[in-house]
Amino acid sequence: MKIEIQHEFSTSAGAIIVPLAKQAELKETISFIAGKTGLSAALLHTDFSAEAKEMQVVYFQTEEQPKRLILLGLGEEPSIQTIITAFRRLVFKNKSRLPLHLAISFLHAPAEIRWIEAASNGIALGLYDIGLYKTEEKTPAAFDLDKLDLELLVPRDLQPIAKRTALRGFAIGQTQCEIFDLVNAPANKKTPQELARWAVASGQQHGYSVTLFDCPQLESMGMMALLAVNRGSEHPPVLIVMEYKPDGKALRKIGLVGKGVTFDTGGLNIKPSTNLFYMKSDMGGAAAVLGAMETAAKLRLPVHLVAVVPATENSVDGLSTRPGDVIGSYSGKTIEVIDTDAEGRLVVADALSFLIKNHQPDIVIDLATLTGSTIRTLGTQAGGLFSNNDELAEALLNIGYQTGERLWRLPLWKEYLDELKSDIADLKNLSSSPTAGAITAAKFLECFIEDHSAWAHLDIAGVTITDSEFSRQKSATAFGVRLLTEYFMGFSNLP
Ligand code: BES
Ligand code: ZN
Ligand code: ZN
Image 1 (cartoon, rainbow, N blue to C red):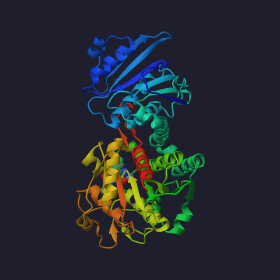
Image 2 (image 1 turned 90 degrees about the vertical axis):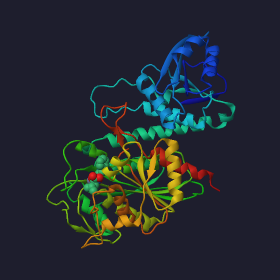
Image 3 (image 1 turned 180 degrees about the horizontal axis):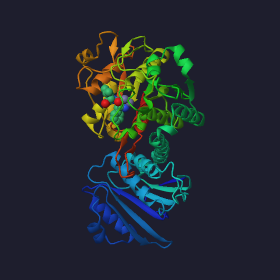
Image 4 (image 1 turned 120 degrees about the vertical axis):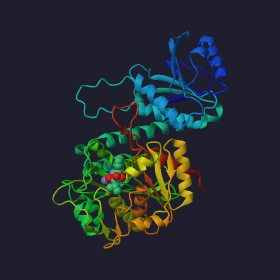
């Protein structure tokens, strides 16, 4: 890939893409573009109004060659997500005809540096091919990031950082595409061992260490809650522990946990049949953590990361944990398993205590497709955020808003804990009340954070896979990858 920076509306590229918001200056901008291209300002004004999802392609002739002008509408006050999706759609629909020599103009208000990252990120996502197991021979897309010769037309003040920003957007996008593959893969192609293999390969390629704990090791360590969930499965569990240390001084040690249930049948409290196949995505938290480890290492971000992924299936057979069974946990607390389908909190609980006891992180963030209750509450518009630390919660809320991976905070008041008291064990894994399910699940996790004072739990059940214009069925969003990456980047500004 080649990236060049210009500060004027002039290029030898075969196509110029101009992302435009619907705003007061639009008229002026269009007249300016018409002047530069020799196109009719009057026709451009009538045919393009910069609505969201609007795209207008027009052709003009220069001395060297015929060219395309691609006006990309973004609507009023576009969010970063809108910009990413506009570029993703453009590439997704036109990969066979976009020229490799391409220019994008950010010369027009209110384009700012974030638009450049969003555009390059969207371009990378647009190249994603969901047909993982299709046998038909694929004709390679003419449009290809490696061969791309990109000119960025940017105002002078953005010039020093434009190239770096674009490269970052592409790099994050490429990791997101790998995460799409992981989440979209069916459970027979992504056993816990396969997740572990993915981590090892990514760690080797991008420079972070990966340690795997297998079943006998987990037994001697006492990871009883993870083992209890695994009992019904033919595939052994694995605890994936990853560590990334930057070359310079790390400003913070951040601990991550991602729920890695590669398929959730519900166990003996078996789930209904409709849409059960989507439970292949119950490792969305693990996927986000794997992706964030990869981007942090790839971009050499200045944070020290330790990530723990408890990976297992939740299956059914004669050995499965039964409803009512009492199990142990890494923390030592005993748990009455009221419902074997509330398995996510069991594996995440063990991973949280393991992480905090052994690695002493300054900040702890877990991501898990934990409850249907979150989906009923927030739909697919935001993940649920729970935190015992206002500063951490605020930071994540802000970044989520900026990256388009939105979060919404829900409370952790102590009264909710009453619902998790068991008669015979320290805790039960399901609330006695059918209400506030996302909150009581978070309260359960809080019992395993060893009194850590900066913990955040992200319930991403509703946002890990969603309906979209890029697939027929629900498909992966890689939710969390950009959020965590941006969160880590924020530490570069600290003293
Ligand atoms: N993996 C599910 C949560 C989930 C539901 C994720 C729908 C994505 C889409 C989790 O393990 C689960 O089964 N939760 C149950 C808990 C209940 C038994 C207390 C739920 O939310 O229904
Ligand atoms: Zn479940
Ligand atoms: Zn689950």
